Image (cartoon, chains in turn red, orange):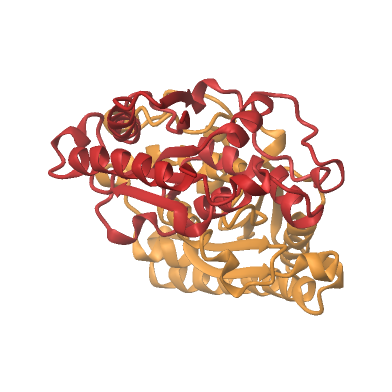
Length: 204
Length: 212
């Protein structure tokens, strides 16, 4: 049974700590022959911030024409959605926040227009992963990012209990995560766990 | 001295609930004699932070755009009011983009140690957060506070107060809120006197800095 994984490298810095962890997760998933992976670097995806116009509450689509058009369809098609992002200034970086805010079209669809986001038979068969890195080593450094990330997954019909997290603090300079004692093993394990869980969900 | 108040509107939506609330704060400040300016982020041309960390070595951002101009204005103001609606449990991407660009000030403070704000300076510089949210949850602003704290810390402002109003979806707009607009005006009016008082007391105790 094919499994579609859609992964976002949300950092403006390519191949930094959050993207490295993403690659570790994807690396453990790709070994499975059923898995197809698409990775999108947000810095190249041309997704503009939400304009706050609320037109999607009436139109059921966004009035902006940009990279989000393709991302919108891919978000619906995927079985597993992975968002990786760095924490800047105690919150998720501006570029992934723009993606999260553009999911407003799904929120309008779901809660205002009361239309399905994914077909009913796919509910509970979609999983989400949030990967984050932070330079500060405070435990609470991820606290402000998590509620926004939850909203993002909820509106695309990934339920709260179906989101996994890999959040590593105290990694700042490029390559710092390579020296982290557990990040790599945790990422590898997470990738395998999520694929196994999805298989369980989609097996008739 | 004339107190200078800078309002920063982080909403992509012109003259919506948050900007209207900010306007009320600025009108209050103006009524008390402050010099007031409002900057609308969507009209500026700036990029979000690239995370290149070049500023950790030089203390300067390699991207030269309107964000640097705005940080100069922020550093020159006595009081700033930073306004953003809540989108998806956080501030807008526009405002987050600006806050992230303040990394060069963080680098000056903590990496290069070339920037230091005295307690006196921080006490004299007051920061307000202005926000509205559609949801009626009390915790809807919680995700915004740490990032607002970050920009106030980075620019030497005391995080003085919030002017926040939730449940906009039900009120159908800030003007229908029973207290928010008046509260914003009064906080704007009152802060001018507070800053004047602190400044004159500081001036009296440090006559050599009278021209400051």
